[in-house]
Image (cartoon, rainbow, N blue to C red; front, top):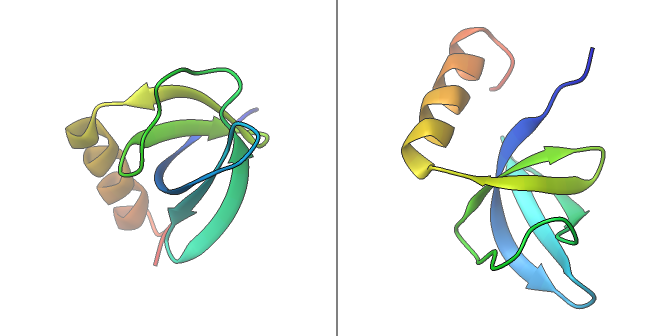
Amino acid sequence: MCLAVPTKITDLLPDNMARVAIDGVTKDISLALIEGAAVGDYVIVHVGFALSRLDPVEAEKTLALMAEAGLLA
């Protein structure tokens, strides 16, 4: 089973990379598979790659459900 997690872009980095954050954890990911990502966008991340941008309202709902299930602090 695979898990793709919604995360928020906090910084754009060189070489089509970005820094994302979720629940206080940051990670550098590749933006090679999507275009036009910006700081503040939510993206679905799987194995270090942003797969798509996500509507902010949907991202917040998903993160709230994950927190309710005890998956986030």
